Image 1 (tube, helix red, strand yellow):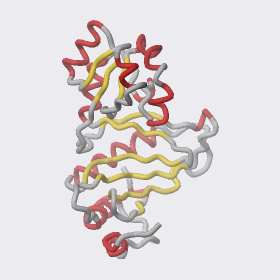
Image 2: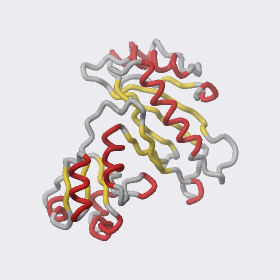
Image 3: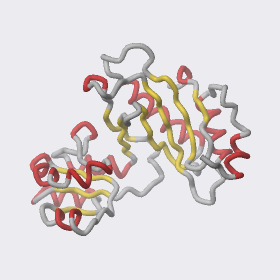
Image 4: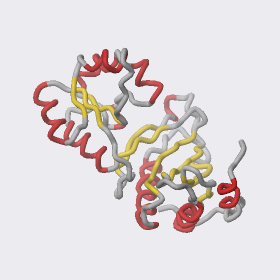
Amino acid sequence: MKRGKKYLEAAKAVDRATLYDPMDAIKLVKECASAKFDETVEVHVRTGCDGRHADQQIRGAVVLPNGTGKKVRVLVFAKGAKADEATAAGADYVGAEELIPKIQNEGWLDFDVVVATPDMMGVVGRLGRVLGPKGLMPNPKAGTVSMDVTKAVKDIKAGKIEYRLDKANIIHCPIGKVSFTEEQLGENLKALMDALVKARPSAVKGTYMKSVTLASTMGPGVRVNTIKIG
């Protein structure tokens, strides 16, 4: 992969052999961010899990204390009083069966998170082929299938993020923007890492977190000393 001049210049500041203390890593990531937009700071956790086994899967959600810095558009599938509740909680879009053709046929995807009440999952299931590959299917483990739509919407708007293993057994999560203070990013990182530690599957033997890397959208990766987190 060909890298730009700014990236190569920033990469010189990072010692790839060093495991940085979390706050030092955050400081370095902020210093290495050179894009003209407010880059997202992401955490990449390489785990010792084998996601092919159901008992080693990781999936859940955590509310970051300082949010993500991104305006999240929430779509809620609900009816009656629950639909009114979702609207009152601040959902951007609320609907039921009438949204199916709009999403399926018109390719409407102007939302970032989908929430559904359990009774609506039969309807939402029909959108599996569209929402599934984009990681938008509501899931009870992530708190996006719930009767408490008020809490679900408010948590998401407050900075709730979902974490899950990808095919390479790595977890990728945003923890804020480069414009955040080091303290805000540090608090968000700790909240995420605490959640991942609690989510450790009992079936995983050996090292659970093999490596943790922090990086901004366009910046180089900075490896973090996992022992110092928390």
